[in-house]
Length: 203
Image (tube, rainbow, N blue to C red; front, side, top):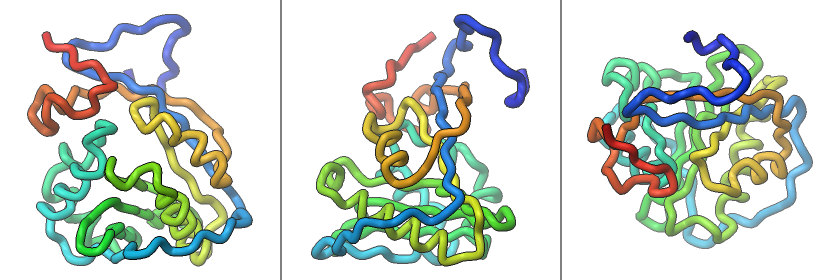
């Protein structure tokens, strides 16, 4: 079944060794009014530069393993290097002092659009108000470019507050999708105890 083929009504079986998540697509077409949030003490947003695949994947895994982020872990070195070298992609590291505590990735590859590809914090940095400051930075940076659409998607594996956070940030839901992928914990791309809220079903 292609990704553009609608699912039939009712229940659909997921192949053994795979996981399925409901994806919510959201967008905004004008910059929202932002509530001023001071930069938290000791926090900085640093541009990820160069093409260090290991460093990028380490950050990606550190931020996303709790929520079963795996796309960039399965991606070939060649494809990931292409993204990291792309001048239309802006990647930032959220740092608390010298500690990497989050990441932000903006993709301007499509004309007049920006995709919020990734925005996440480590578990230790979550729930402290830092996410609002990072989101404000994302919105400001996105709309400082000549775009007319800023979009993102979140899924049912993400933090339970993620969807409402995006809506409160000015994004509007416009579509649902279902993503089915091989479970990265079974292939060893993520540890077996990653994302414990997603059951690990072995063959």
